[in-house]
Length: 317
Image 1 (cartoon, helix red, strand yellow):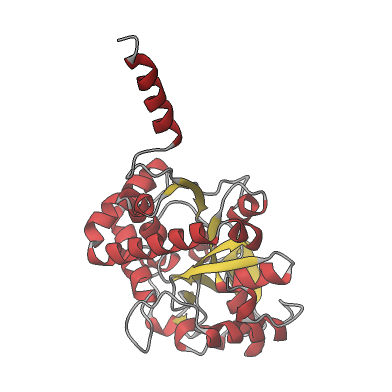
Image 2 (cartoon, rainbow, N blue to C red):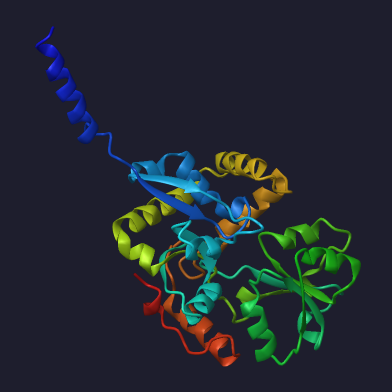
């Protein structure tokens, strides 16, 4: 027994420093979506809960932003490794001097809609008061207003639907997968005449993609690509298993105290998945479209939102 003891200790030390195969040390990765828990981020929840990140050798933590710490605050402060951004947001940030790397595109279409309170097209309401988000997301709408000489007066608010319902504005912006469904639940149900869908009128600029700071990406490009690969797999699983995906979403919704319900989250998920389909191929393609990047850059530069045009190469790995 006395001779066996040193051997056992040696074996334990070897196992501590050299884990057995199948017990790979997972690389930590913190992901922060740009908003509170909801079906917009179902693919990432699924990738975590179904073990896709772990299979890629990653220990992923999903940390949502708070009222005091936005997703970009966390990226800039090195508290998170990646976040989701709309393409227009990403271009603004790059223009401000923040170097970003795009690692996965989920949205293939723009989900922005403009809804008037009367049964007329918003394009007939020159000079109208239009509700928009205080947090942003309206770059393409502002470009559209300028390009078509509509001269909208933008009224910023945290709860834009409230402004619409009480008649404080003539129209409101909305996301087709979120606020638009909230409008359909009010007594002021908009008609199709009053809805302008940006994706159908020459302003189809891609939205959500995953971005990292270039410095974080350079530290471990392989880790970034593993995260992107597992995230795409998560979205593909959601498309094949929407009801089980909703179960997962509702777990995150309840944990984050998001004011919503399963019916709204199902509508959101259905629309988010629709927006992921390329209009030509009819399939989710998970890629940035160079022409859309050029269009967004040209629109924003022409209307004073960018100091210079930004090329797609500036945000690719």
